[in-house]
Image (cartoon, rainbow, N blue to C red; front, side, top):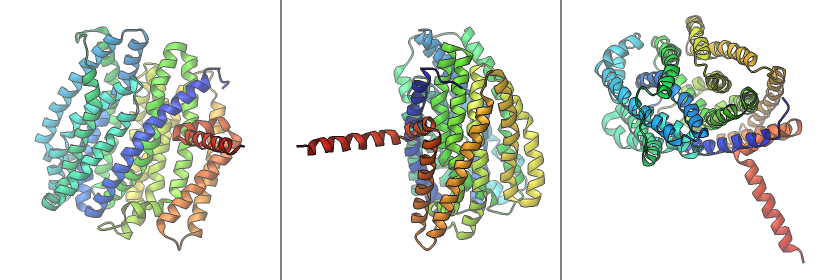
Length: 532
């Protein structure tokens, strides 16, 4: 696709916004990793952790099915009112949804707490009586994180719509710190129950970070519940909620199929997901959060051509970052898992079990999610909330079939494989549909980008593997650092030769361009001071 004069400016704007999200996410990541390392040390990967991951699935299921639509509905509505000069109307919509979100989620949490035993028995029928009782007790505590995470999701969307990206991304760091302190203080007295209490404290802290700025701004205008704009937003949200219950049921189905597996195998998938979440925070969340408001504004100003332009850039930026991350991390899985988890109750067997599925989880949870994020955002900006939800809902059948077949053959590895099987089908269908709607879309360029970035990523992964083989007698931390640095450097050098504009976007997004500019400026000044 030919660049318009404004396109490089837009791409730089997206990269800088993504950098703010990534910086905030990076801080959150450090705090989150510290919490996970201590949790792994204290509790390992056994029956109690299976129970905890199961109890955490219920609020996660409700969060995805009931709250995932909030940013996609709120941001375009806020941006449209703001672009039209109706800023007070935009804040009046914020007021209505704030009240609605907090009230409804609190009621749902109370109902789930009351029926916790029945919910656990349905979700994981294969659990032993002790395991099920632990999961039920933890659910009673953890379900009350739902109202807090709902308000955090909503207010973070409002802040993103106001082009504020850093603190919403960094909010998780404050939450993880609260989680860590809670677990450390309580584990000796209440054992595994420290984990759900830590999760509850985490969501409360995270909620406060984004909610306080929204409440401080306040709203001077109030619109009624029958306001056409509010009704339209509710109408658009209905497909999200209806289909979201189906789509997010995959997390419950995963627990259902895993309930009959040996103790600890569900935890292996949970720990692999934590590693995937590192890159989801740094890459998927940063690109998606940064590009969506810009896509909405570009569509409001330039129509379909503006949306096509940024969808294309978002997809290529996704491929250029997700493919090397997947390849390099897979090659470095053993030293990475060893450093993060292998200590205390987390033994070598658990390390080896988690390493096996790291590439599988990354493929489904990072690569396919990142591509899907951009495609889905394009649909939502077009005010089409049906197509993507129908496709994801229909392909749940594929997940169920794949899980039944693969779990019987491969155990927890087969269960991990079922997600990317479904993801490949759903993302392919959505790509075909959106490319036809955004005509003329450069689909041939998209395929060439897959081949180019895929080839470069494979070369980077081989480099990482060769480095850790060469350094196999050295400390694991050195293997990981040297392998990652060598692979990433090779990838960026070659990418800069074959696609300089994409390399520049990645450097802007990661903050490398600022570092290079600082070094260059400092070097020039140093030379000037040395001149006679």
